[in-house]
Amino acid sequence: MGSRLETDLIGSLEIAGDVYWGVYTERARRNFDFGFAKVHPDLIAALAMVKKACCLANYELGFLEEKKAKAILTACDEVIEGRLQDQFPLDALQGGAGTSTNMNINEVIANRAIEILGGQKGDYYLVHPLHDVNLHQSTNDTYPTAIKVACIFKLRALSETIARLQGAFQRKEKEFAGIVKIGRTELQEAVPITLGAEFAAFAEAIARDRWRTFKCEERLRVVNLGGTAVGTGLTAPREYIFLVIERLREITGLGLCRGENLPGETANADPFVEVSGIMKAHASNLIKICNDLRLLNLLGEIKLPALQSGSSIMPGKVNPALCEAGIQIGLKVMANDFLITEAASRSTLQINEFLPLLAHALLESMDLLLNFDRVLTEYVKGIKADAKKCKEYVDKSLTIVTALLPVIGYKQAEALVKEFLESGETDFRAFLKKRLGEELVEEVLSPYKLTALGYRR
Image (cartoon, rainbow, N blue to C red; front, side, top):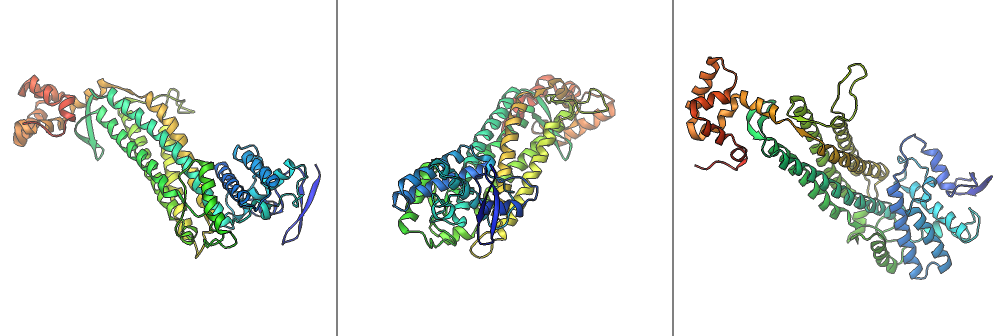
């Protein structure tokens, strides 16, 4: 395809003839070649939705002629569908508050529209990246709006996936409802509980995550599109500012609205910090649950699904590898939350220069949680209980006498423990049955009694 020469403020630059990006993207590609991940494809698609909305508003108001507008809209749709993904080569870590990514999509859409109109890439008199595709826009209103659009779509998918994980734990709650086991605090034996109640606690934590994830979409619905550079709407017609948000709402199907204080929406990124906090809360619960599953598996009370051999030197060893992966994912999400918080806090005056890092970290966290939750849901379905092992721990534990306190009192319970320790017997449950009667002991230690809220006199 040869090459083409494009010129900007800095000078002229040769660009490969077969690529859709232009001089601005080419400079950014060379400037920010850090070997980091590329700009998230969901952010690219969301930005194309924003560009489509802007094009529609400009066309309806007479700022773009029909032929040019239709070509731009077609190019936007192709980007949204992911058909030009290889034309977005930029590193996610870039200076300029996202300007490089904004110009990348402006140039790709312009050159694709030029092709649609029968021209050659670089014939910007047909469709110009700035004069046409970026008309009445700034990076500072399109880029943060696109981040919010991408995150809302991701949050909806994550909320549904969390709901399925909650259901998986709830089904195990019912399956294990009749299995009495020893509860543990401080990694020591505590009072009896049921295995079902233990899994119910997992389900409840995940249920809170589901609700928080579903609700925090509201924090992202207010956007600053139309505010241009600093939120004042400078260079954008008033009628465009009111219309463009309507078109974006129609294109995305999301309940978006324009911020009442556009300078404030442009200058501050705190809604992203709030959403990241919700992701961190979910990560925290996943870490706790994964570690608990490892411990229960170690104790033999449950059997985790065997996914792969666990050792290159010890034959037959199977590790709780998925739980370990989940803990690491949770830690990564927590680390991303720190980056998001730092990036948002370092905004200066009317702009947040560090949105590229913030956007990548937040979308990465959502991806990690979404993908892990899907895998964990299937994993939980395969967990088996060892009722015999649970009973073995219960029968030997001195703490089961605690359940009898409302019946026999603390002093008598203490005396029974002392007598048992001096007797040399090993089955405390059998010992209690001999002293207090089998019917009483079995009733007090029944799954129903142990999971009822309080006791009936």
